[in-house]
Image 1: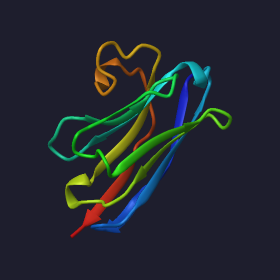
Image 2: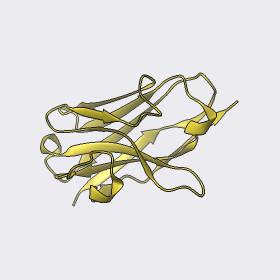
Image 3: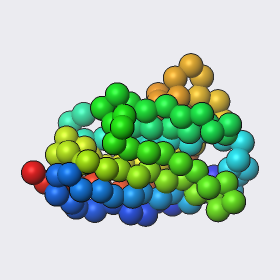
Length: 124
């Protein structure tokens, strides 16, 4: 079955950087869209960044210019490089995958397999 295992994250001061990783197994990674999502306490899960099988990407406006999503198809691994972190980036971060994201690559409702989540905390 599809499995996504995340690593990375942690605590950092504002302005710092972190990298998240997500290793996929159980399906043909190269043909699927991959995304990063986050959920802060009391808020809905939101799309942060996504990369399709053809390499096209989409970013939430709040992270454009600060975060970079990438995928290594040889390693079945998805990455999120986060820079210039802000306290409002604090959340649980999840990777996810879908074969068909529909019209919105950042909509969590189209994704059908999820990682276990990893906490990112940014202090001011």
